[in-house]
Image (cartoon, rainbow, N blue to C red; front, side):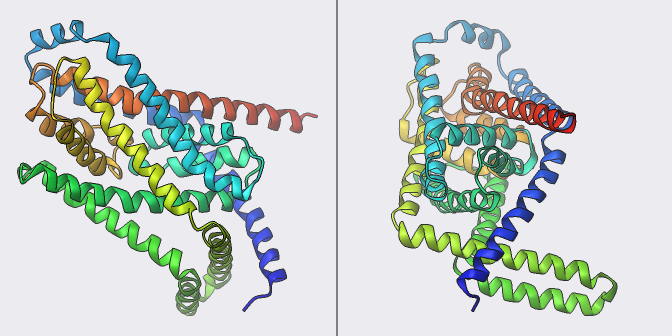
Length: 374
């Protein structure tokens, strides 16, 4: 067992290495070319998907549906978008303030919207986590501390969404037809199961995973002796990272046992707010549907597209809306509903996140330029 002094040294060394690695990955992920490319694909796929829905609807009635929108419901939707952003930021802040006391909630708000923006423009939601780490790191949070907070909240999401999905399937009472939706549901459950299993193992048995990792790398080193130094260095770094993870998780979840249940509660409220937003949009379109049915359908759509291989789940989300909401939304109104749903749930939060990310990148670029020419 390592002494506390060695643990502290390992943590500090690992934090420095992680910060350096983050700077390197940030240069690759957060650049104007990559951001513009991701935003372009998000826009093109969404426009194409909505166009397909529009094409197969009654175009004349669809155009009239735009003029019949009851605008009094739109401010309510904007208020629910604000609640969504605040709940998402508080879900991070309850943990991060324990690791860095005094950090303002504004930093967590920016980290959350940056997460939403980069998640929207990258496949498999892959840019979300790095974006959040990038913002927190700019506010003095250690990279590994930010990473651990992301993992804990991911654990709450991995627990909530499959359970919500199962409840939604039960509530739909065998109304789901075989085809695309069934395939997407199987994909969703498979991916969530894999991520959940990895998360549980890393959370409960981090040192065991570290020991297995060391044995595997030792075996690989014997097979490829020329790469022994590089493999060993990577294994040592990973082992130290796992050790740091264990220590921080112990500190957070042992000394603050109510934090994870609180995260799970906030996660539930966060997604319930997202689901209910669809009901308000329908009211704005003059459609009075069963709220439980609306929530059940949105649960399934959100579940299916969470790890979709396209930016923001574009294409998959519109297909899910077209198939599932067609039961309660007239065909002529479906394109309008799809556009409003994607705007309030994805595009508006992503626009706020885009402003935050681009502003931080601009500030960082100016500082680097100033220091290089100072």
